Image 1: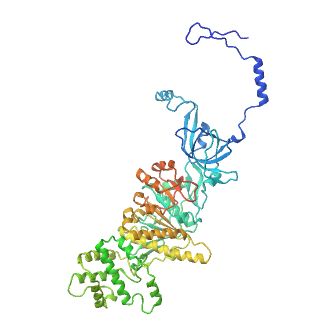
Image 2 (image 1 turned 60 degrees about the vertical axis):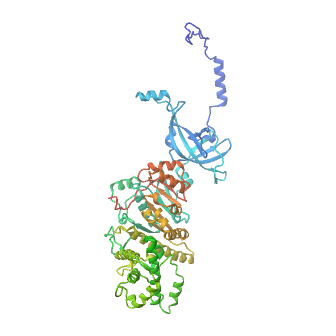
Image 3 (image 1 turned 45 degrees about the vertical axis):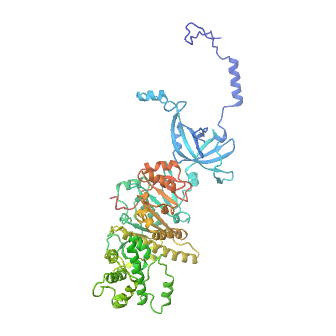
Length: 619
């Protein structure tokens, strides 16, 4: 036996505590024998390979979210967007979840703001207590015994083991496979994020690419176009700035070249590209090997859409339709259309829907002639009115008689209407014999990229007229292609239409005044989904896009948006994006985006791939 030891305690000097004796040898031998019989403690089989445990819930816990604690050595193994499997051992349930917040480092047994830690740190001391990690996991689904998934109806019990899914299994769960690669998952660069081009439920359901200037929209658009071309999709790009006119060339930008090298990619131009520009206008890339001038035909323009796009006043609108009706009657009377004894023309005239198209063979100059005759009559000018088309010039008395029967007045409104028509006519883009109308059958060939360069057109009204006409022409041709494919029992070739600066074409204020135009776009969007025709709306000012347009879109690529009011509004229109991703949106770096597609199991933050082709506006 060891001698007794005197211990001073409790501040009572001289007091003697009870003697402390060593453990008897017999007790030690008994403990060793018991350990030998039971064996060393081993981790239960259900917990092997886990890197964390679920925590107890607290008053601040949220539905479908659990807190997971993990050793500090495992912090790097569970970054944001990691997919995890949680085995709730006690009730034999298995859950899949995703890390939406963290990992955070917390000291063991201390508060992070405890006085001792704060005191040492602010006095420039070094105190590093043992610590652990904490992550917040959002439950995605419950996995049944047969491997199928259902929405989670319960929560994992406390102290359930948590396992991180490997890249291959995580990719399968997230459904990131496809032949159109967007980039890599943020903090998960071993997971490629792609979408399938061959699924009718994905791209034909329309895409919105939104973000402030400098966020990386152009890189995203050009990269998408490059990959769509490779898989054979026909692409039409309505380029209002001429930014994409050189995507047939590989990029030479130093920053982009370094980014491509880091991703193991090479610079390359987009193949099979063609530039279209309005007759009499210039293109942003005159050295492109395929440049075609085109005109618009006034006869293809719905009079109602034309009225809205030129923003006629009420008085001007009344006179415009008065002149239009008289012009139409005269063209029929003079045999311009329908031509005499032509049954096909008669059938076409009876089936005419002027909410969709104009009167066949009517020209803008015809309308100017008729409006000029009206002005001459109501102002009671002397002599004969001046007309320019032979069809009216040769039968001027009949024209004047028809105009007089219309009995219109107010030369002021007629002058204002004529001024707008003449202003449009001076652009020389309507009915110009120096160029042909667009060949939409050629444009929608497989793997063809057609860029409509509108950079040399300052008038927003004219640009919107062009966009409206081209959208209608594309839809009409895709209908033809679809019917031919159905007859041949195949799928039509997919077509994607990219609309740059969509907020200028379909702004909130414009939609209120242009119901006919929006109905045309909405009709194209609805019919396009069934006919493999998808639209991509690109905007740096999403606050100007109306709810009606946002409602047409099912897939999203959201670059940085700093305006909290815009983010709040988008949250109301876009489902399937959790709050943690919305909170990151204002702070995204250039090239990062929140991507939400119908093919993905959940929205993801993605590092978008750099573009391999040349963009003009970044140089």
